[in-house]
Image 1 (cartoon, rainbow, N blue to C red):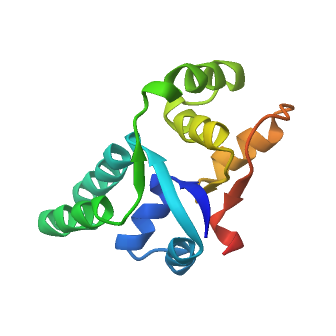
Image 2 (cartoon, one colour):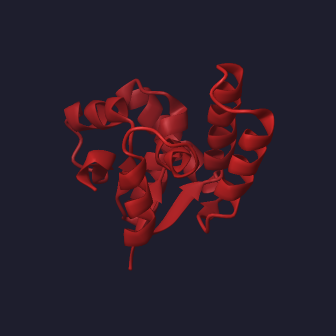
Image 3 (tube, rainbow, N blue to C red):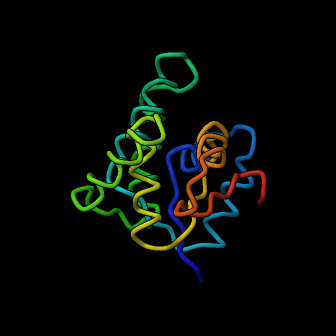
Length: 140
């Protein structure tokens, strides 16, 4: 089974039914998944926002966060990714949070699977040839 980096936009769809949730579940069956440790904080923050907007109850968010933490994603320290993520953020004028995922892809030589179409567009518009493959969730 091949490896891929996965971001929070995909993982949330494993625990909260929304558009492309079925595709997100297929990603789990197709790849062994890895993410920077930021992944867990981003997932928790998305769940918190869903509680604030009345989409989830507190206990549902807690159970969902725990399920994501136990989903078998290999979580990698961000220390070795920081300089590359910062360079990418500055060069591409894009939030550093997303650039940590891209930096991990570059370090591992594997693709990124994301439901973040804005991220995909931003990086595909770049004239850089050293960026990893980005796979939108629609592809599954």
